[in-house]
Every structure is written in structure tokens, then in C-alpha cells.
Amino acid sequence: MSDKSSSKLEKWHAKYGAVVTALSCLGSTIISWRNNWILTCFLGIGVLNCGTIGIFDIKRTITEGNNQV
Image (tube, rainbow, N blue to C red; front, side, top):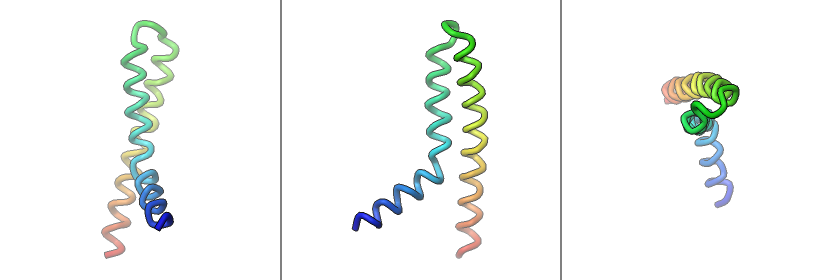
């Protein structure tokens, strides 16, 4: 039973993990705006990077799901 829920968690993590990281970077970027420009730039790059990876991960899982059916 634990294998089944672990498998679901791993699948969710593989599909949406980068998007969640990008959203948390975005929130931190908004909070640190005007206070620390170096941190803001670093987190902004993280939003772009992780967001791009997340979008491509979701597209990949959708196309793999369509190919398996």
C-alpha cells in the first residue's frame, strides 16, 4: 500500500515539481523586490529557469501519456 502512494507522489513530483519551485521563487521575488536587487535578479532567473523546465516536463508527460494509450 505504501508503494502505491509513494508511486503517486513520485509521479506528481516529476510532473509538477519544477512548477512549484518556480512559483515559490516568484513569491520570494515579489517579497524581496526593492530590498535586495541581487536576490531579486537571482530569484527572477530561477523563475524563468524552473518555469521553463516545468512547462517542458508537463508537455513531455502529456505526450508520453497519449503515446501509451
